Image (cartoon, rainbow, N blue to C red; front, side):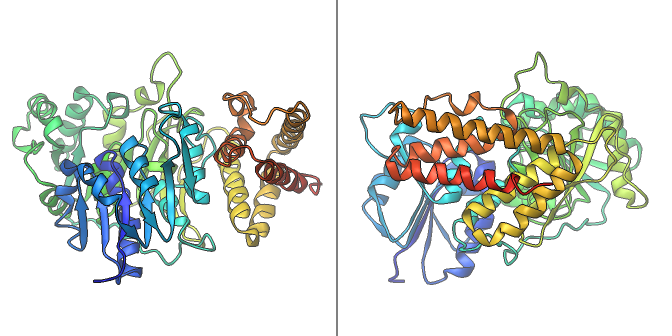
Length: 474
């Protein structure tokens, strides 16, 4: 194969690598003439190699050699310095993602990076600022490859139960805040077993001790498979499940992307619209609290995690397995189901009736339409439709957003009049929550373009353009 290869740099955790699968499969399907190379940690990619036989994997130690090559396309999905440096040094017909600017820049700061690609820059701007984001990360990996933001042609597996009454319980996650504890899992497994369901305890080597303790407390020693399966064997076992009950973690994405029915217990600092199950028809259970989906918890304790109880989750699981009637949603919880809209973008629709009407779903949809419009002006109609829907339901919210945008325009204009090219580092944080996502993107775009005159003109034009939509409201 003489054509230049395509390179994807993804050096983060296993879950991040598995979340890259839709992108990798799309590249394999639509660019068969180019070899697909992926740089990732060996402990993560080795298990995926049997599932992706047409992908060539390299460890990060090969970055120096990889940087000497020319590529048809180079996509960096990693923030590690090694990946940033490699992306900067290599040559490619097209680059997407962050790259290093100068080695004498402040380490770890965004000022030493430049991000290529509209959606890659949007994704970078979500750091510590993902409130009201409605885009799934699996979709953000793909969108820069499309002139129009339409992913309806991207294939997704359909979840199908195996009919075995087996339920997988994925015990671990990247941090304790994002997963239930030993007692929770033991009580849940014991309750399921009492109802004739076979619970299987799943996890990697890091969950071996936890698996033994859960099995001991539940009286189900034969159910513990933690650390005993390769990734290939785990995928094969998951295909025999009726349901995989899991926090937001790597095995959840593996189950999701191999057509296994998933119930995601979304707790702690995770956002289900970003990193929850991506395929249509999966279930997401969250606390019915306004703070869910945060980047980092700032409350005195994890109230969202405490809302999950073994009896409540067990009742929901049993109702999903029976597939008759409405799911038994535990009190104080919200059950949603994943889907895909007309543009092929990830959706998360709540199935139970909320106790109080919230503006957040409409606000997320509105800002999603804003960013779709800024990328593709043909999405103007969608933006108008979603703004009108938000205004009809919450007129005070749209009034405040219009006021906040006008204030933001004034602040930017005043900043320029004072001949200060750079905005203060915390500028976006100082803005009201309803427009902070938008402000963070504008701030990062200015920074990404070096606060040039062109960058400022584009930013002010964008602010004026989005503000103008509010002047047409009744």
